[in-house]
Structures are given as structure tokens and as C-alpha cells.
Amino acid sequence: MNVIKTAIEGLVIIEPRVFGDSRGYFFESYNSRDFAQVANITFVQDNESRSCYGVVRGLHFQKPPYAQSKLVRVVVGSVLDVAVDIRKDSPTYGQHVAVELTAENHRQVFLPQGMAHGFAVLSETAIFQYKCDNLYHPEAEGALAWDDPTLAIDWRLPAADVILSEKDKHHPCFNELVTPF
Image (cartoon, rainbow, N blue to C red):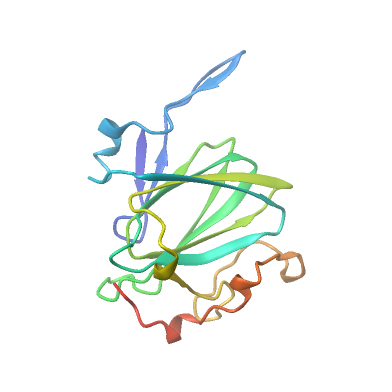
């Protein structure tokens, strides 16, 4: 696998080795021995969501002690995956990285704890999968406004096409965040 560093410390893009022929393709989507070069964690929960074009999910995070690192990927369709660094002592605090993940490019993103995370569906539908190193705890939920002008995230969707959950319509902006990290 090829590990690509980003501007945010600990946040990396992973390109697996894909073996293809006339029958299709094969790749290891996760191998604990190889992943140890990225992070020394144990994943305990796998999640999957299916969404239609225009859906924006996020920007979500879990507060300590239930913070989560994630390994995310797309198995159908295309999304713009976004991570915002909310670690107060980080030199990239408040900065974000956006990566297009598709079923064709097989890219994955590893997000260390301390990231607010979201994605926008760019294709007709998308199936998004991710591993977490901590179990979900509803009382530890945190989130930021997806459209916060301070963050200036280009979600690559016309505003009229954005579809949000009721909950995601009402998150605070970054400058209102009392960071738990």
C-alpha cells in the first residue's frame, strides 16, 4: 500500500495495491500488519451508510474518552471526504483536508482522533464504509456546521442540491467550538 501524508499530522491517504485483470480486481482493504505502519490502534466497530446525490453528512466527531480514529472508504459511487483538525494544540487547528474517494480509485483516508469528519455524495448513490477504534456513544457526539464560512470548505455541490439531516442543519460554527481535544 502507498501511504500519502497530508497537511494535517496523522491524517493520511492510503492507496492499496489493486490487482486487476479481465475478471475484475482484488485488493486487501485492510491488513493489520501493514496498517501498523500508519497507526498502532485496534478497530472495534465497522459502519456503512448508503446515501443519494447531494447528501452531506457531518461534520461529526466523538468527544473523549470516546473519541474515534477512523479508516474510511467508498465501495460504490463517489464522495468528497472532509476532515477538520479540532485538536487545540495542533499547528493545523481549524484547517481541513478534502479527498475524493471513489469505488474506482479505492483510496482510503485514515483520520486520527481529534478530527471532525464529513462527506458529500457526488455520484447518484454512494456506499461509504468505515472502521472505528472506539465504540459509538451518543452522549459523546459533537459536530460542526458543514457550511461554516470560517472553514470555507468547497463541498463541490451546488447549495440547492445539498441534502442534510435535521440534526446536521443546526450545528455550531468552528469559532463556537469548545474543543475537547
